[in-house]
Image (tube, rainbow, N blue to C red; front, side):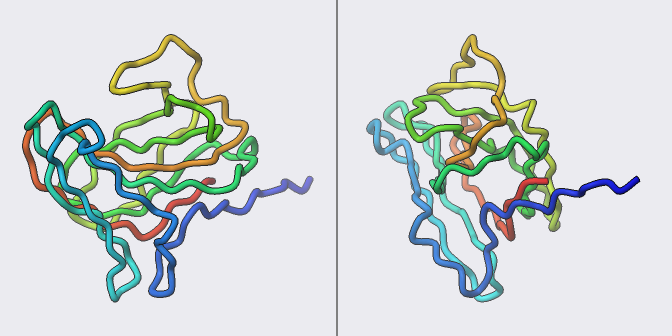
Length: 168
């Protein structure tokens, strides 16, 4: 019996020719905060998301966001982030529709060596402005946005290096 193996669905492959123009930094400054995040492409072809999170003026988060045409993701069960950090906690967030106000989130820690973080899509729970919503978890039908956010309720500097994001 032959089994069909679904090839990975690449959401974004950071490489030395990657175009980051569709990635956006969204900090708490949209609400009056003072956090400052940045994202750059390094010579080795990885992305560096870095900055500071400040709790001043009711702030407390920094994020990067990538929107894309809706992808059918029913055949996939896991999002994989190839990352390296400094052992800080981040959120991976996905959206199933560009019209959604809420995101589906899951936490991960970025160790200080390159690691493939595997997050089951079924475990992404709905959240809006830091509050868990009384809805079902990620419906796993379509995906139209991926973002990474840091919001650990403390003033801190952060570094996250990203090589790729894909589904398997």
